[in-house]
Length: 487
Image 1 (cartoon, helix red, strand yellow):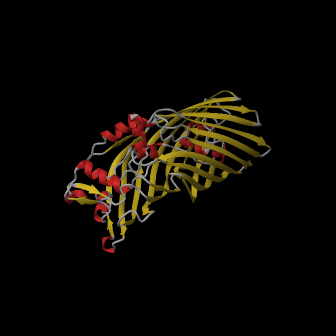
Image 2: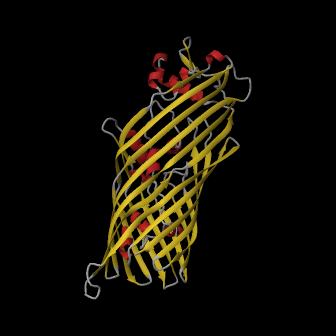
Image 3: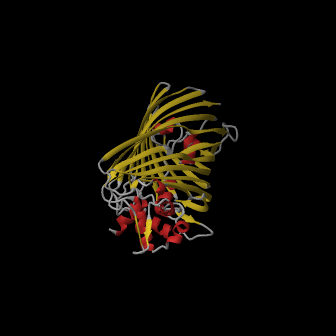
């Protein structure tokens, strides 16, 4: 029971004294949903043993060793994100459209000597470019009537539990509770030395609008080699970058006149997180026969030495007594810290059916409990302990197939990204289905792929012991188009 409750708390957007990094933030930047060329997406990323695609820089860099010619490509990947939320019997939906870039870059294949001369090394390839690893663009609406309590009561509970003197409230809680106190939404009774609010027993319509945008991208610099057309090795130096924005508005409005004084509240919160990191990937592909290939790759943990958060908030109150109405703004918060995301390992298998097609599969191992926060000025012991206790090692599976009809290709794929939590509470599995087609000529190629995905999340508006979860279903629809040339 204790472990389940901790997991639930990870899904709570906490209104704390200052913005603090949580285990949920570590998970957000540790989960990678590889995007790239339309061909790569068409097989749902199952390219670890196939190779000869620019996107493999980010998964198994040995794939660069299978290039026989130099190549440059660009991928446009517009996405429609759709969300559906169930909260206290009410359904709410919203969507967001984003015109994103899946990847771009170039590969240069070099023959080190005369091909007619003997030698194990057949060719060397080098490449560089950009791969998208996660898309944060989405909108969520949560709406429903709470007949039991309000967010104001959770604030009062916190102040009473900590026995905070009235003169310290706004200094100790400048980004949330202090704003509520300054706008008369929470008040102190000197006779009982307790804090109270007007809607302690609910009767309010609660709405929350969450708008997130940004992405996690990586610049890749790769080198690979082909030995006897049997063994391929590669290495990628990656420079990932995080750019995450969250703008949310939370409102409560009384549903009946039985609540004295209070009419409504409006709480706005804005966050921007950014950071740049480094990692290293090494990989190998072995082809014992023309019809089968085995692949393996290792990704070091990604170290982000310069993460930075900037956030601010405001609160507005409306009462039946106009003189009680008030608006307050928080200061702008800034904080620098470090983040390390987990080590990853991939195993891959591909079957090549002559000149007709292929079937491939990847298994990716990642232990989300290995993520860590650090800072020279603060201790992250409690947060890191939460990460270790509540995340687990499991894995992700990608399966894909491609079939050839003259110069045309038809593709399909499936991806499963497992629940990263130690219990089923707050299950966050993701399913992905893809399909596409392409044309590949001697010097020109183009591909188009459609990718559909779904992921659920339990979300708590405030204290999880006081409110029911809002069950959010996220859907994404992406159409990626790649255009490339060989030279």
